[in-house]
Image 1 (cartoon, one colour):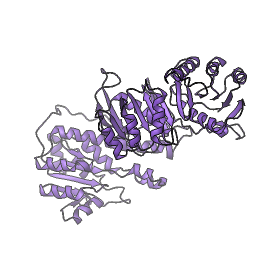
Image 2 (cartoon, rainbow, N blue to C red; image 1 turned 135 degrees about the vertical axis):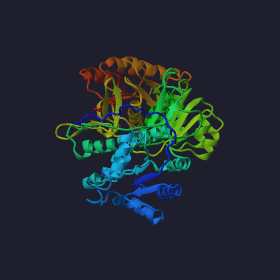
Image 3 (cartoon, rainbow, N blue to C red; image 1 turned 180 degrees about the vertical axis):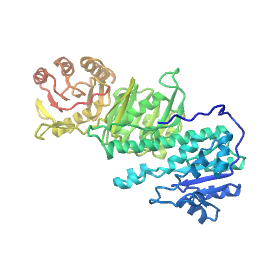
Image 4 (cartoon, one colour; image 1 turned 60 degrees about the horizontal axis):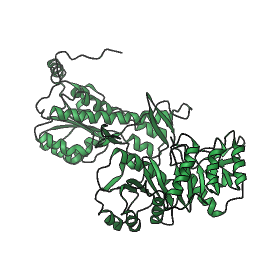
Length: 544
């Protein structure tokens, strides 16, 4: 590898505007191209262009020099080679602050470009379309990134533009006498981000789809994000924070209809609430505080679901975040109105609901965009990143011969003691099993009539989680012992019978848990002695 070139005696410093006399245009996305070319020509800029870009500009009656006329070499190999030529790249890369560069250009009869406008082949869109490997590979741009990187590197002399949305600013700058050094630096930063994201998309496709190594996870993992917002502060006031998006939708791309600016903690809680509500098929609402559910419920309609979710723990719901998996109706909005709530997030709102919320000017109201669920989830650790499949409630457990022995669907559960649950009890058990995974481990959730009535979460032993679930069930509903007659779900097995015994003593009538403890026999015996139905799923849903 040769040594990097040096630049003795030259400082990249702020300078005056540099007029644009010559521009190179080569774009796949023709949005705004004709208007840009027309304005540049009117400003006296000489235009050089490639292939279909040149054809589009010429068809609009704007004078343009085709790149093959500049290079003296025709486009070849089905368009794979167009701009990879010294008369193009020397014109882009010449540092006009250096006399020897200018002397070499004069000797070679090469003119400089002060503006390069390029956007790239749609690689990611081609992958998303389901195209075959040959078509995808053909959309790997070579000349485009080369020009973009060359112009960005030489930003002291050249402005580079990769986004059609910036054409208006380009025209204004050209008409105003050219780009300042600060403007060129900013454009160069955007250009390098553009090519970096492009390269990550290509490398990720090769590693995960085209040439996987069979390990289940690609040898290379890359992703890019763009800053969407700078937040007031982070988890605590002394921490700075920002929101970045990956362009795939989700909560980070939600539209805010009203209210104060979202905070870091608002986003964390809203995402937890979104996940908890959308774990259910029917109308469902989750109320979250400090990244844990203080209420989850399903109902015949979204208003009924909200009322039941709020009733789970009305004390903790104060200042909470609410997520609904259906359009929020006026009836739900009226039920929520008296309750101090930080955020409401839902796929949509009735106009009348928004009228109700308008009276709560600080309430943040977010509309979730439609988006495909993620396949993996990431968690940073010191010096690295943990990656795992997203935990969904769709697990199926099979033995070596393929026989189904467990899973998240109640039809795959094993009744190890007690009478088979009736339809209503089984529905509550199924609800509880879906809802408990929203709580941090160790988690116990008591439920009745499609609603959580007591949640014990985040404890370092399951006994304390059982105590907490019972306590909340029995102390937050005007003296009602809601644990008695409820069902219970545990996100992981009971290691001893002591935790389950707390639930049994409180009057729980049916329990679902994964099973798998070396003391399962003791746990089953405790349920049997109490005459309680106990189901095993064979799968668990830890949430750390």
